Length: 498
Ligand code: GLU
Image 1 (tube, helix red, strand yellow):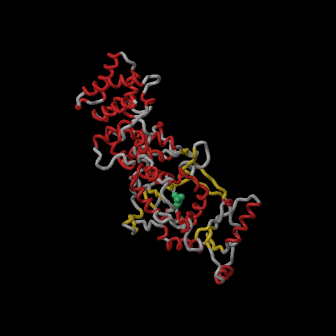
Image 2 (tube, rainbow, N blue to C red):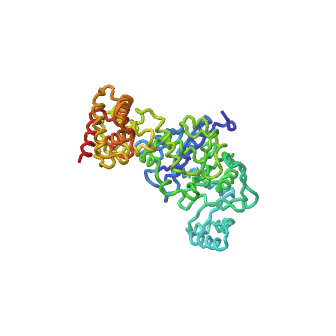
Image 3 (cartoon, rainbow, N blue to C red):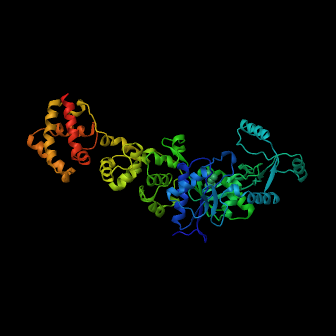
C-alpha cells in the first residue's frame, strides 16, 4: 500500500449546497472516496455553505442521503438527526457557516502581518474597472487601489461607514509552482494572479480563504477537485505560505465534456444522481460510469464493482484531457450490470418499475414475475425499458391479422398451422411446460407436417405477443403457462377467421 509521507491519507468531498447532487458531484465524491479507501485513509464530508446567495435548502440532506445510498460512508462530517445537524469527528464543525469565527481570526492575522488588506472599493468602481480592462483586452483583476492605504486612510473610511472586504496581497514577483498528481508540474506567474477577496462585507469568507483554513485544520493531505480550480491554486499556495503551513497535495480532475466537444447539456448535468436511478439505471452502473469519467484504468478493464474500483484506483491513470460523457456508455455499463444479475435478483430490482407502470401490484407472485422479467433481461439497457418490452405478458394482445401472417402467408394457412399447434401444446403436461419441451414438440410437428418453420412459428409468436418483434414463441409460452398460451392461440385463430 502506498504511503504518502508519514501522515495517514485524509481527503474530503466539499460540495456547496446549491442543489441536488448531480453526476459531477457524485464523481468528485467517488474519486475522493476511492483514493481514501485505496490508501487506507479517511474520507471527510465538508459542506461549503459560505455563499449565502446560492444556498438551496434541502441540498445538504440530498448530499448526505446520496452518499449514504451510494455506500460512501464518511469518517468525519455533518450528520443529520431529523433537522438537527451534529458533527461526527474531531475536526468539526463541518459546515463552513458554523466556522465564521475561525475564518475571521485567520483573516485578521493575515491583515496584521501585511499579507491581506481591507479594500473599500464599491461595486460601481469595480464594475467600471472591469469594463475598462475589457476594453483594453486585459484579464479582469483588481487594480490594487486599496493595496497600500495608510492606517489613517483606513481609519477614515471605517469612520465614514464604508463597506469593506479583505483582499489577499498576492506577491507581485516570482512564480507559484506545484506538482499536480494528474498534470505534473504547473507554474503560474504571480503578477498575473488577482488580489482575491478573502472576506466579504457580510463577514463570510470566500471559498479561497475557507478552503485553505479548513483543509489545514482538518488535516487534509490531498485535495482532489475539478480542473476549474487550477487557476485558484496559486492563491491557495500563497495563503499556505503566509500562514506558514505545509500545503496539501493537489490532483485536478479533468472537466466533463460532451461527446463531440462542448459543454454538457443542462439535462445531463442537472439530472440528480437519484434522477438517474428513477430513469432505470442501477447504482452499481452509475458509480462505475462516473468513476470512469477521466480515469482510464490499467488493462482497459472498465466494468468494475466498487471493491475492484477501490483496488485499482490510481491518480496516475487519470487523463489530463476532458472526460467525455456519453449516455451510450452509461447504457452499455447498465446493460452489462443487468445481465450479470440472476433472474431472481433482476426481477427483484425490476419490480418497482413494473409497479410504477401499474402492470402489477405488491401481491403479484414472485415466481411469475421472475419468468416474465427474464424474457427481456438479455436485451434491455435500463430498468425503465422492461415494462414496455413485456407489456404483452400482462395484457393479452389482439393482434392484427396482417401481423399474424408470415410474409405472404394466407390467413387460412396460418389458421391451419395454429390449429395444429393447439393439441400438441395441450399434450404437454403442466409440470413439463417449459422451453425445451415446447420446442421439441413443436419442431417435431413442423417436421412431420412438412410446413415451413416461419409459417408456424411466426403466427404462434405473434399470437402470444401481439408484436412483430418480441422474444421467441417457446420462451413466451413457457413464461405464460399452458392455459394462457392456449387462450391466446385461440384468440388469434378467431381474429384470422374474421
Ligand atoms: N465547494 C467547492 C465546489 O463545490 C469545492 C472545491 C474543492 O474541492 O476544493 O466546487
